[in-house]
Amino acid sequence: MTDWVVHLIDYGGYWGIALLMVLENVFPPIPSELIMGIGGIRVGQGRMEMVPLLLAGTIGTTIGNFSWYWLGYKLGFERLRPLVHRYGRWMTLRWRDVEWLRRCFERHGEKIVFIFRFMPAFRTIVSLPAGLFRMSALRFAIWTTGGALIWNIILAGAGYFLGTRFDEIDVWLGPITNVCVGLIAVAYVWRLVTWKDEPDADAPSK
Image 1 (cartoon, rainbow, N blue to C red):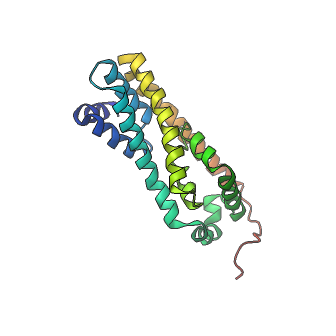
Image 2: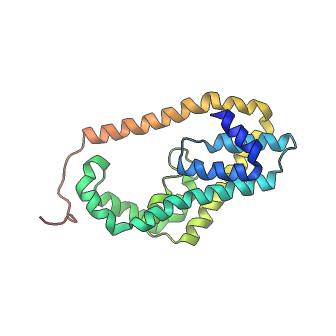
Image 3: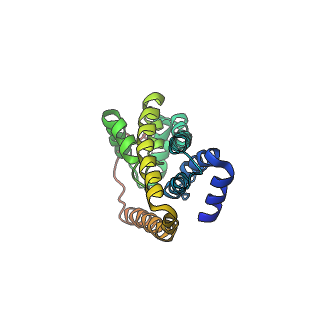
């Protein structure tokens, strides 16, 4: 994965960084750790500047997250209801769980979006419920941008100070990502196997 990311960054410069960060948030297997880390290396080599790098990475991150936000916004909270009632078992989700999530976003939406920007397994998908539960686009943009900027500063700074040794991150980053995905898969299978149908007060009568 490292080689083509490096080639795109070297060929596209800041535009390449922005494009990769958009793709990273639409297709999460592309790691932002690698993209911004390599960008930081290029800053240390004098081939990039830190401020434009951070601007490109953060703008790309925000744009990528808005694709999921608008998907959730267009789907809408109420349109989710029949899907949950019909496919709740396979989604391992009951309508009361959705209601609980909605209340959480109403009370702590900004904190949730901001904090999840630092969680590898959830920093992209959190944009979907933000749209579903009608978090305002301005608030979403502010907190997504703020969290993304801090995260990108950390990653680019690591690349800058570690230099070429940062390439070694791809050796352990892949296995760590696979472990996270594996744990999520195991948790899903466990919920599916232990799932028990329960009457839902909000379910439509037949």
